Image (cartoon, rainbow, N blue to C red; front, side, top):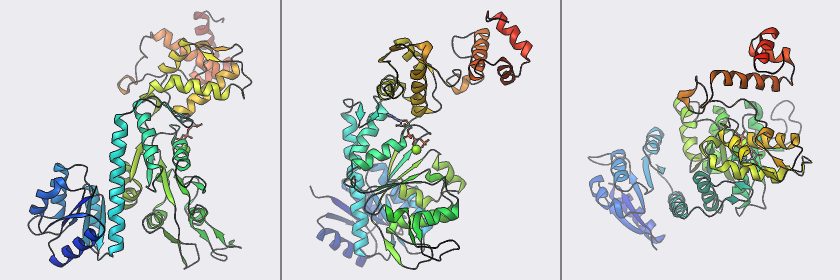
Length: 449
Ligand SMILES: Nc1ncnc2c1ncn2[C@@H]1O[C@H](COP(=O)(O)OP(=O)(O)OP(=O)(O)O)[C@@H](O)[C@H]1O
Ligand SMILES: [Mg+2]
């Protein structure tokens, strides 16, 4: 089916050129010389291309009106060269992309095709979400919960494309795993997947690591070395901890994302590469945007397909199948005979709040397997990392549900002893008690004096 593009441009000549170009590329074109006319045609458009400076009403107001009528339609704004701030403003207001005038027709077509591709992707994704509930595993990624089902559907839809993906979620929720799944389901699966941990490198090293350097670029540069982006050419770059990238490097990343080009340190030869970018963050990038530590333009380039992976405590229905999965996976290596897990043990896992998410669950299962001598893992054999904490924020300074103060105190004392490997002096220090005070409490608990 032909897609319909609405062009809103008050300058007759440009409107005509755009119309001809889009029509010859196979689109149906609606045209409007003013915002008022544009609004009337917006709801049947598959994409809107609008000037920002229009008589009577500016493009941003028009954008807001269009969004009210047709929330999903991609809107590309055209703006005069030198007004990048306005372009960023319009992205914030919900524009899909922008074109700085004057632009080439090639560039126009690239931006249009990209916007339509992303739009189709999101549509299909929505359809897929509606018929969810059949698949509880994607490769080795386990998840029955609604949010994980959506993650699987999104992986399936984005993997075949080159769209940039931004994975957001707390540490240990599975961002690495998902990034790999996207790469290995993409046409690039036989090409390199290069991971760059942006928090591990100081700024000066990061630049040479990412973009490479020429011999003599700096002291110690004894030979020419290609950077990670070059290594990843025709493949995928996974930028982990993207929130930690220093400002100077953000500019260069933006250029790679936008133009797919860069220079090695100490070289003036511009290199072109073909990479697919997946980025991940465990910080709230929106907060970084507000504080001005993360560039807005880079954020919008990265956030083409956002994927938010919720913490494990918000999708506890995933716990039983994850536990079973880790048991199958880890028991042989741990030399364990365990083949099943009791309901009571599952209940204990479900009651915990999992600050370390799936990674912590994996560790807990592994440790419990090592300690367990039988063939069944029971609640007593589950070695949690710390005493269960209250779940809700408002309960933060109160007792966990169902416990008395005495019981809670006893739990903490047992936990301290466990952490101290039974050493009472050490446990007493952890609790801020003298050794005698601890002995007195232990005696009360019937655990010797
Ligand atoms: N849904 C899942 N199914 C199976 N295993 C999982 C799942 N999610 C995470 N894991 C496992 O948990 C561990 C942590 O996952 P991963 O390294 O992908 O987390 P992350 O989000 O990248 O964490 P960080 O922000 O600390 O880098 C890995 O061993 C991974 O295999
Ligand atoms: Mg990770």
